[in-house]
Structure formats: structure tokens, C-alpha cells
Amino acid sequence: MGVVKDRRRQRPHDWTPDQDLLDQQLEIATDPSRVERMRGELEMGFRALSDVTNGVAVFGSARTSEDDLEYALGRELGRRLGEAGWAVVTGGGPGTMEAANRGAQDAGALSVGLTIDLPFEAGQNDHIDLALNFHYFFTRKVMFVRYSRAFVVMPGGFGTLDELFEALTLIQTRKILSFPVVLVGHDFWDPLVDWLRDTLLAGDKISLDDMERFVVVDTAEEAVACVEETCGPARAGA
Ligand SMILES: C/C(=C\CNc1ncnc2c1ncn2[C@@H]1O[C@H](COP(=O)(O)O)[C@@H](O)[C@H]1O)CO
Image 1 (cartoon, rainbow, N blue to C red):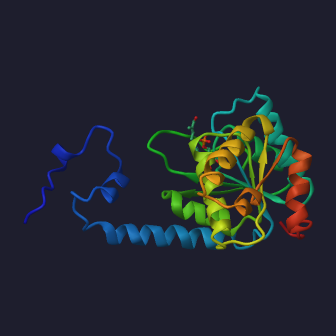
Image 2 (image 1 turned 60 degrees about the vertical axis):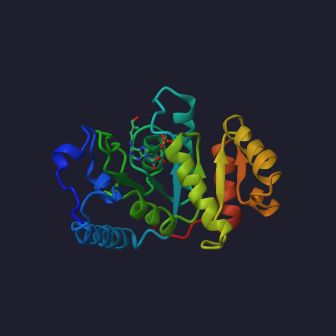
Image 3 (image 1 turned 90 degrees about the vertical axis):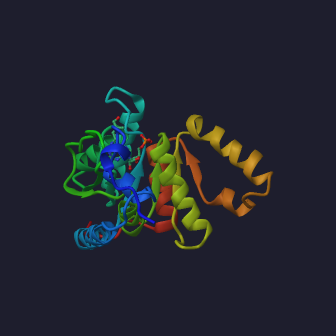
């Protein structure tokens, strides 16, 4: 049976290249070239980041404005991590990512941004020393986990929650070990923690151990202390 390939009729006005990959109705002949692209991104990331041995990833909202208290906290966090010898790794975008990168540069520490191609103009922030751009979210996620020794998670939306729950799943399934996940901001995170306990734990969807796979703090100082409690002090040579 033939497959309809008339893309003029099948592509909606907001079509994106990745839509083809997910749409089984469309031809799959271009998939091998995608594999090459995926491989290329992984190789590029492994090469460029191989000497980042003491990264800490900071996640948080792309929408935080510069005059927000959360921006100041993100910047302080980046600075304190940098002063303690950690390289700061973010998604390289605006908001809390920018704040953390900026704080790292304030401290003279290595500031890494793993940016992502998006269907709309998102913008790399101006406070990055080492910038890598990815087409695929999943190749970029490999880099966050491979080249960070801890995740510090500030308030955010879907993107931030995705990054948080990916880490928790990898820890739960023992794909990664001894990996601190620090949530910053009781006001923001406590309702989620309550839901995890009252709904997921109570409904036997997670175990009590899973509730101990993250900690919640309020300050940048506490966040750095939590990272170092598990990881020890940063190794030299960020
Ligand atoms: C939405 C806007 C810009 C998007 N630009 C991004 N650049 C880089 N990384 C991003 C971007 N958006 C999301 N991310 C990743 O997800 C997290 C933030 O997502 P959230 O939904 O805002 O919580 C962040 O940690 C990034 O890794 C302009 O407003």
C-alpha cells in the first residue's frame, strides 16, 4: 500500500522538522540522516565537555525577569557554586538560566550553556563561556547528567519539571548513583512534595525511599552545602 507523501496537504502551518519523526503517516526515509545528527550531537557534546569534571546543573524558569527575587537567588547560587570551585551548567537560555550563568561568571568560574533549537527565537544568554547548541532535547539531557555531579532546581515550569523528574527517575532506577537533587524554595516546591507524598506515596506509585531522593532548601548557601554533603568539595580544574 502506498503512503501519502503530499506534505503540502499534510503539514499544518506550525509544522516543525521533528514532527516528521513522530508522524508515522509520513515517510521514514530521512530517519538515517537523523541518526547521524543524533550521533553528531552526542560526539560534539562528549568532546566539548570532556574536561568538565565538576559541573553542577542549575535548572529553572526561562521566564524569570531580571528584577525578580528568583533571578537574584539564581545569580547568588551561580556565584556561590563558582566560588566553591564548581562549574555551572545551565540550559543557556534566559531567566533563571541566565542568572545562574551570570553568577558563575561573577565568581570567575566556568559558565556552561547547553542551548536548544526551538521553533521560536529563544535566545542564548550573554553570560556563557562554553556554549553548545543541540537540536534534540534527549542528546542535551545526556550531557546534563553526564557532566554534572548534582542538579539544583529552582522554580520553573514544564521544562524544569521534566529535568527534575528525569533525574529522579534515573536515581530511582539506579542508572545514576550518589547524585544530589536540591530543590530551592520551600514555598514553590512544598505543594509538589505534599502531592508526591499524599498521592504518589499513599497510592503506592512510589516508595518511601523515593521521597528521600531530593532535598528542599531555601537559600543558595544551603543548596551548595547539600551538593557538597554528597559530592564533597569541588575538584580542582573546572
Ligand atoms: C520560553 C522562552 C525561552 C525558551 N528558551 C530556552 N532555552 C534554553 N533552555 C530552555 C528554554 N526553555 C526551556 N528550557 C529548558 O527547560 C528549563 C526551563 O523551562 P521552564 O518551562 O521555563 O521551566 C530550563 O532549565 C532549560 O533547560 C522565553 O520565555
